[in-house]
Image (tube, rainbow, N blue to C red; front, side):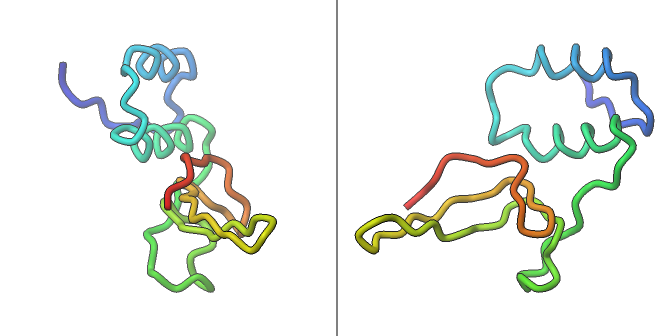
Length: 94
C-alpha cells in the first residue's frame, strides 16, 4: 500500500474511505489527515510554526496552559489552532 498524495478537490467519499481504513494511530496520522481534510474542503492548510505566538495564528501543534481551580495548571496540545481557537485537540499532558 503506497502513499496517496493529497489532491486538491479530492472527492469526499474517497477521503472518508481512505481514512476509515487507517487504523487508530491518531498521533501518527493527524497532520496528514488534517492537511488532506483542508484540501478536500478547499481551504489552505496550516502554516509552519515559527515559535512566535504572535505569528503562529494558524499552525499544527501549539501548547496552551489551562488554569484550574486552586491554581493548578495543565499543559494541553492543540493539534491545529487558528487565531487562538483550537479545532482539533489532543489529550492534555503534564
